[in-house]
Image 1 (tube, rainbow over the protein chains, first blue to last red):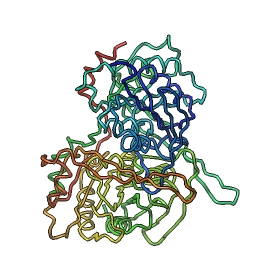
Image 2 (tube, one colour; image 1 turned 120 degrees about the vertical axis):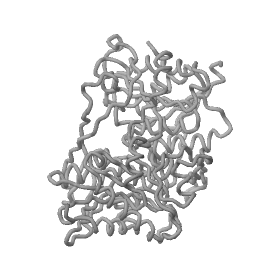
Image 3 (tube, chains in turn yellow, purple; image 1 turned 180 degrees about the horizontal axis):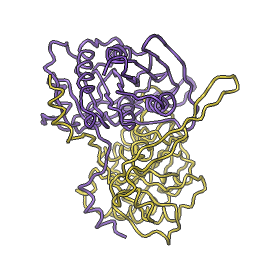
Image 4 (cartoon, rainbow over the protein chains, first blue to last red; image 1 turned 90 degrees about the vertical axis):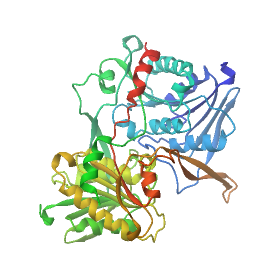
Length: 261
Length: 261
């Protein structure tokens, strides 16, 4: 397929003004026409959330040959839904790119991440979707390696046959090290882990107590060498293919016995 | 274990003032002391979202023998995190109940649901967690059947041995029919399905266009008789055990070949 015949949708969770979003737009433009809808404000940790109780406002931010960028006053999933169910209903979209996120979405973060929420949502529309993250929260993070690997992964996915692209969703994380130090790409499984939160408690100017969440991730499988956390700690780009059946099949027989009524 | 020795944590996504939340409190109190933290405002569709960028305010709503109820200005997951990582750090919690939700959380809704977001979060703390939903959005829905089945499922889970309770998370949905018409409980898998959204477009009083999401769920497996959607359509209470490994293992070998670098 020729570049001009391809349409790529781009979104993220750090908002349209994030540096990683501009990098994603640059990568996407190498492969096709680009339409992007990104949140108007940062939406990290917004998961698969969507907006039921409020109206959403859409603003055009940029328009030039082969590129349209909008901001939306909602979540990353809202951006995907509005794009696919309102703006692009008559167009074939070839790929969804969500990111490039500032910060890791490895392990259980796939559940909390707005970046991955949008990528999962994209895959619901049958479009191959890639969530991209760099394990560096800094607003001025160096995206050199992330951009290089994003380009390689996008090219590879676009060359996959239709049956492999259908419903594909990738959680890609790039370690925060120099491009030449990265050892390559590892296909991994999602690491088991949990967040241990801490709450900062203080009083607002009117004397009312408030709490502010600050937590740390705890890898529960430090020994395993087939997880995304292992790959990142050992200098690899981690790629976890994502699916959405959350059924704990192995628990069904026992529960069927004890819950039977 | 005696009732007074047991501690049950209750939350939901429809807010502390929802009718279904009161029903959940009533059920929980039959089995133990209850501490509840529920969102101050409705949080349907909030998924696993948590709040990073804003302080959270906690208000005591009710305190009597064996019951404390608080509201929190955050998401359902924030309620669980604040409870387990701040309020209850020195106490053993025996069960988390999230709900009873007004509206179905069957099928792919497990990903979008704030009710299930909170239940999944509870299971991360090693506590058996039950998300309860009634397939009726009405604020005045009849919770008679939901309450009866909630009681039965809570009693059954509390009697499970420790190794079965560890990390247990259940997505329970009760059909909107009379108690005597319900045929029983079915242990099921999560039905494949997607939302087809529609966007209502209008102009606000200042002439600015806004969009408002309204969608419908589409069951992609109408023939299958082992899904939660089938159970609900056929007069059963559906119970899906939930796990959080979203790795699409079957895709790894092919992707390892094409993405290798």
